[in-house]
Length: 164
Picture 1 (tube, helix red, strand yellow):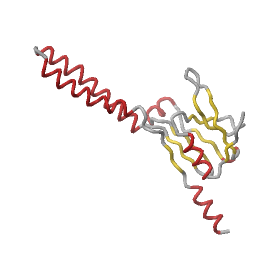
Picture 2 (tube, rainbow, N blue to C red):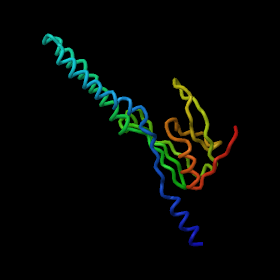
Picture 3 (cartoon, rainbow, N blue to C red):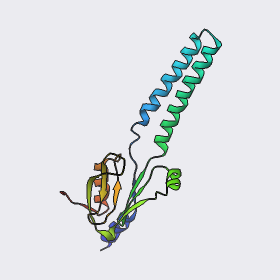
Picture 4 (cartoon, rainbow, N blue to C red):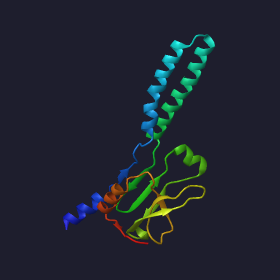
């Protein structure tokens, strides 16, 4: 009896998943290359106008790559999985406030069976999603590791159904 109570309490603690940083590595690796190009270009420019052009052009690329890498690392969506609900929080709070997008939730009261589906959003390519059949709500999970989602959901007492 106490073992069941302990497992239900531990299942209420949410497991928070974040997608990998993926493309951020690309921009992080490009930044030092552009810095090297800035130094080489500045040293080899014959005129002041050439040096200004190199500093402005390469400087803009360095700032863009650094900004892109930091944004991709710091502003990632979040998937919180507990025994009572699964919550998808969008990537950027500023975008969420500006567009009115809010966290999407799958509640245990709608069922405990989950399915991973492909779904289309208006104007975007199809992506993977997590849904409770019949709930009418699908959480987008395109950049999350589906194996980690399955493991976390199963550990919290959710079941996955297979088939269409």
